[in-house]
Amino acid sequence: MHEVSLAGGILSVLEQTRERDPFERVIHLRLQAGALCGVEIPALRFALESIAPGTCLAEAVIDIEELPASAWCLPCGQSVPIFSRLDSCPQCGSHQLQATGGTELRVMEMRVV
Amino acid sequence: MCVTCGCSQTGVANPAQSPEVHPETGDLHFGAGAARVSVPGMSQERAIKLEADVLGANNAVAAHNRAHFSSHFVTAYNLVSSPGSGKTALLCATIEALKKRAPHIAVAVIEGDQQTRHDADRIRATGAPAIQINTGKGCHLDAPMVAEAFARLDLHAARHHHHGDQHAHAHAHEHPHDHAHEHGHSHDHAHGAQTLLFIENVGNLVCPAMWDLGERAKVAILSVTEGEDKPLKYPDMFAAAQLMILNKIDLLPHLSFDVARCKDYARQVNPTITILELSATTGEGMKPWLDWLLGNPKHNRFDGMRARIAQLEAELADLKARSA
Image (cartoon, rainbow over all chains, first blue to last red; front, side, top):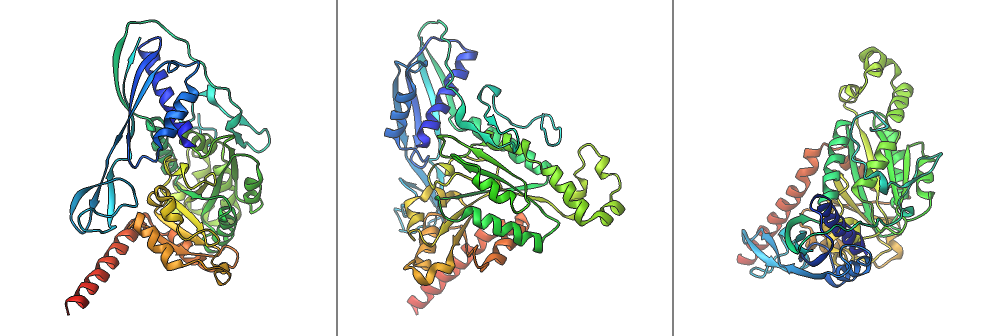
């Protein structure tokens, strides 16, 4: 359940932003999660909803956008899309893949009042 | 200020989130704090663009830890596994083996568990300094916890004590000024010595994969009493590790664990992973593990490349055989 820790991390990003740029609460929050970021999106949503009461996230609508991942296929010598670390190359079937993108978990933007 | 050496920054987290500290041992308990409550301000509806990495704060502290370790000539390894893989037994055996093989190297341990000081007590029994971090409900160590523990770890005392015991003549002869030096690490260079810091993470094959602690490498330990398909079931961890240790191999005669298949699975999720087989109980396989630990970083970095070359050669041989 590291999603709870990550939800806490998201909340502290918001609270740090609020210290610099005061607002009352978040109406809408948009997150991006790469397919290899190690996060179960329903679990992250549940964790955010669990910690929201009493914070600036209490009444926020939360969008979590899942991004596809990419990997460098060594035999093909090119970047290919993957959806999990267990995937093989969609072109040649090799497992000689080095993940190059899709591990990010970002707070993109929010609407606040 | 770093309580060990006096350097100005330790990467220690916000004091409001500081853990309870055990008065005698310095062990840390992070599960005792209260959630922070925020104070709302007032403003009109507007959009704020952030594009902030959620793990950015952790990663910044991890980068600081890495620099701090480097300035102290500390090489840190983050040991990750499921509970019961034999991490602590492996560490105790490693510390004893290092005393014989590389007595000039100091060893220290940061132990992570949700509760109890049992593991740190086991390490201290070997004579190595150890700090226990209790995460409370937390399922992994994070970089600020390690920063705080490292600042409290009595590394200098261990090193100076160690030098006093083992190399009193050489040290006094070659470096008469070192102990008086405020930040006296030059003796580490001169002896080619260093400190190995083992960070034993909370037993969990999921969450610790995501948190950089400032280590040189993650070492995943998989015991043969577990399933050989663990690398497929927990791919993030085996993808994040540079080395996998197959532990408890003395038990293989009693099990149906397929070592070759397990290695294939690990290489499927991480083509460049180095794999060692070991028994902390019998000592079998300890030598390659110590070689890996004591090898220079260049050597380790080339491990993956060598594995890749071997694999390509095998594929080429296979292709040649088919076309013949």
